[in-house]
Amino acid sequence: MKNVVTRFAPSPTGYIHIGNVRSAIYPYLVARQNNGKMILRIEDTDRGRYVEGATELIEDTLKWLGLDWDEGPLVGGPNEPYFQSERREIYLEWAKKLMDAGRAYADPTPEEKIDEYRHECNEKKVPFLYRNFRPENPPKWEPGMPIRFKTIPKSYDWHDEVMGDMHTGPEVLDDIILIKKDGYPTYNFAHIVDDAEMGVTHVMRGVEYLSSTPNYLALYEALELSRPLLISLPHILAPTGNKKLGKRDGAKSVTEYRDDGVLPEAMLNYLACLGWNDGTEQEIYTKDELVEKFSIERIQNSGARYDETKLLWMNGQWIRRIFDEQGARALYDRTVNFWPEEAASYPEEYRVKVLSIIYDRLKTMSDLKTMTGYFFTEPEIDVTAIVENKFLKKMSEAEIESLLKTAIQKLSDVKEWTEDKLQVALNELLEETGKKPAELFSLIRIAVSFAPFSPALNLTLVVLGREVSLARLNAVARSI
Image (cartoon, rainbow, N blue to C red; front, side, top):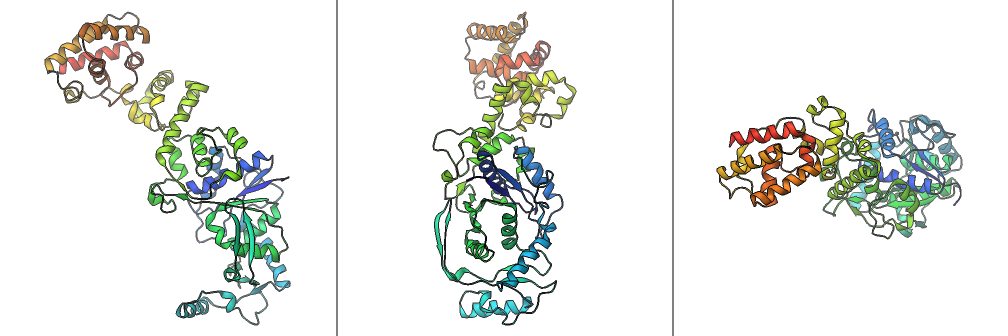
């Protein structure tokens, strides 16, 4: 298809969640893959749910993920405005065309009367369809009156690029509202008008809109519009797999994940693969690889289970990849807001050294606060942590003290405080003391860090430095 145009059309009703973002990623990939364009359109006609600042949050999240748009807020374009609240006159013109053609009408029926109709149907145990109660002689439209579509009940057949061939009977067609009494359009009408005016060729949205598609098809037909490609994206499911993912299931907003130290590359990678794969065993994709390999045909037609553990694993993979391919400094630039407060008083070069030996243990950048504290503050001596360690608890305190003093003497004799020289000294200590690595190294590691775990012992000692390392070892020896 030539001139591919996709769109992401979120509502500014609060935080942007995982499902929202995936609905932006797929249109982006399709547009870039086909040298087309993606439009960002803000569907802000539900004024009761509008949240101040939500649009800026949407824009910021997309920019963070590297999902640039070709038309829309901040960048403009030939189809301005891109806020539906600013396009009311456009929708009204299209609604008037339908009224002139006898396919829409002004509906002054009060809500109380509509509730009576609905109650009557419930009593009779039949579906409520407003078309069965439409006014026989609707008045001339005036501002403040809703405008309804006058549907012609019929069957529809269509093809969904993910769900396959679909069919529905006339029983689902109804006189849906096009323009509300407040003058704003409904989603059902506005998105069809906007897609037509903006030349959208691919409509990608959640599968929850599948049941409304027959009404959309009726509108396409009444407005004499060609149907775009319809692509329904299955739900992202809760970890239990039995319902749609919600905030109660532990899924955080994308902003929260970013604040917790999840990298944009990992978030993009994970969400793109949540319900899609290219048929291989590959799991780590760059944005360029996703653009190259993505295909609508391989979007699965069933829900994809959300797995935060997998996201964090993938984030760890990306942390290592950035370090290995771009270097310590590139990774350090991503860590600005994640160090312990005490780290601020240390030189940047020292923090880079700490990162260089700890990075391969990180799942998120926020782990830096809990995993590097002993590099910046003196740990509190806790003899219990030593004598109750699983590798040391069979030894008496006297044995532990003697072993520690032997280690201090050996390390004090190291002339060049380097990784290689320290490793040689540690290996010699093993031979001289007859201890297992788990015993000897655990003792030294705990004494210098009092942390649950640390990087390779020789690397930890190098970064801490000779003076600090020996001072901590001596302080512990005096405390036993």
